[in-house]
Image (cartoon, rainbow, N blue to C red):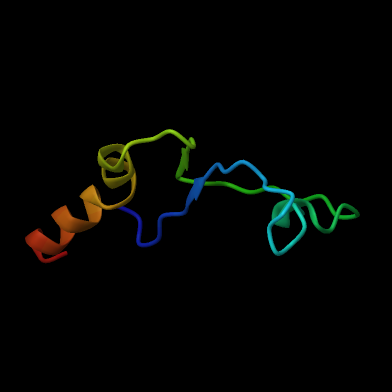
Length: 66
């Protein structure tokens, strides 16, 4: 199990939000950037699926004393 897991939850951009609908990952369009995520979650994912992807392995490690 890796020490750090990165998860992103896909979200519909609301044009009325505080950033005016700006996409944080595309603010600097002049540089090539690549992002890697251990898990990408859709907007309609259940809490059980979020747990399975983000927390289950961490809890298992804690219980085992890892």
